[in-house]
Amino acid sequence: MNTANSLPVTVDDDWLAMQSAGSLSPFKQLLLTCQADINPRLREAITSNDHVAGAMLESAKPAALSDDFLTRLNARLDADLPVQSEANGETRDEDARPEWMPAPLADYIRHSGSRLKWRSAGLGVQRARLGRNRRGERLYLLRAKPGLPVPRHSHSGQEWTLVLAGGYKSGSQQFVAGDLHQEDEGCMHDLRIDDDGPCISLIVDEGKLKFANPLLKLFQPVLGI
Image 1 (tube, rainbow, N blue to C red):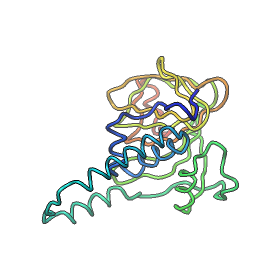
Image 2 (cartoon, rainbow, N blue to C red):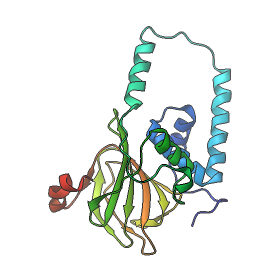
Image 3 (spheres, one colour):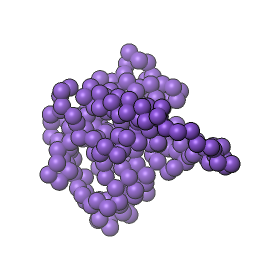
């Protein structure tokens, strides 16, 4: 189990450097910000990276902007803007924030003017959609019942999963609250939710799961996963 004095499972240093440089998508930045909120050691590591990035920026030589700089910048900003915010239904009061919900996530939901609404995705899973952007990324919460096996699958692009409550095992690796599990289209795996309680995760992905079982593929449009 992770403690405040240990580093959780997280993305590698290259991704953390991109977080400090501000070059990650806002959804991925939110996941890392939430993880840092949970674990002070990770927060210290990211802050240290920020200081290094700031020092490098101050020492860099100025360069002329290209003629199409503003056009490219606006295109990048448009890609990062949420197409829609989809959370609604429960509560937005700070006092009612669930114990498992990091403060940055509560702020994101509150500032979007939305509320959580959990919907069944079948197979003992509930999902609360939070938004999607023009990059094709989806942001959502997933709540899975204890002991649930998730069939063998791969991914359509990157998937980042931040465990907020409970845990699960993927292959031989255990993930617990505060861990960030990163997968991509090159990985085929199955996982099993821990028996001692439901697992709640904050997820950013770039597309739906790709199940190995052809029968599950048929039901995917219904399940929405």
